[in-house]
Amino acid sequence: MTDTGFFDDSTVVGELRLTGDKVYPYEVRVSNSYTGVSRIVCAGTRWELETLLESEKKRQRSEEVIKRAMSISPDERSAARIMTENTQGIFEEYRNIIAHTLEIDDRLDWDKRLIVGEYPEFHPEPAPIKNISEKKGIAKLFYDSAKDEEIYRREVEEYKSRVETEIRNYLLEKEKFEENKRQNNAEVKFLRKCFEAGEKTAIEKYAGVILANSEYPDTFEKDSEVFYDKVTKTLTVNFLFFPIAVMPSVESYEYSLELQRIVEKHLDEKSKNKMYEQILQDVAVRTLHELYEAIYTDSVQSIIFNAFVLNGKRWIEGRAKAISPSGKMRCVFSVRAHREEFSGVDISSENSEKLLRRFEFVRVKNNFSDVTEMMNPIVAEHGK
Image (cartoon, rainbow, N blue to C red; front, side, top):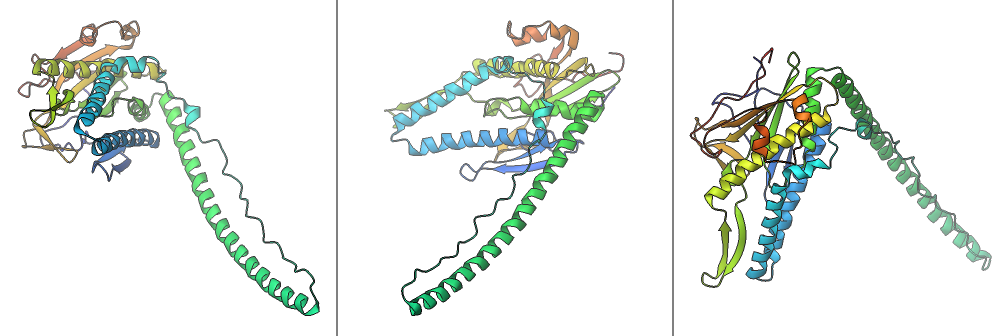
């Protein structure tokens, strides 16, 4: 039995982030001074890091735009309309989780990741031109010439000093560029070589970039870890979802004349649970599709997707904090799909849960939001 990478009650989950024994060489905090949001981004490669950073910055910019729009709205009726348009757009994005990936080629383009250009050549500013005074009498000629010579001499000295500084800065920036180019290209080439050779860590890193590249709605909080078993050629994806408590649930906003304020119209409990389950299962189908499409070698013949949600957590300043030591993540469903059987599936043709049940699929009996129920995830076992 292989290690799925999940942990005991002492595990700390920060910022909806899996933080087990896996070590990430890259960790960067991204903050937005306007909204006050601050999150840590972790990655296994610079490729994955850059993708995750761009995604997080985009998400934070979107939050800032919405917050600014609310603050400058001329009146509360207009604010309610803006907020309703925004929330309807969010719901539409969630409904299109699978449709969004269908027109995208998920396979990584190694060549595009290489830095092939050269650092620009250095071109100093033009040297100062000596100004020659017009002849207006012998005395004035000598006086102006001496004055011009002194001005010209100072201009030349200042010019030389500026150019020397510019050359030093240029050489430093060029050295940084060349070092970054060398490191980046070496990492990409090495990752490709190891990935195509079926090396465990490289396959996990490649899959990590695929998952990082996958664009979801800006409000979608998630994290994932991947583990590869070379014997069974199985890739296990542990996917951590946001709890239902933080899922967008406001259908619309209206200004109430009676209350003299904006009121929210929420999804009813049944609709909210249905939407939550649909989102999680759509993500599972989409992840299976993206990984099988992107992994072009025969190293991965089976993928296990384990869906985890936070249990007994609350949100403080963008971080998921444990309310009690017993609060932890729990598995709500698990699916194992083999490459051959998944290749013949049209993921746009049917309901995600119905599609998942074509494979080895287990789930909790009650709603995914029921914190009293949990299950053991599927694990990669030798011979299965």
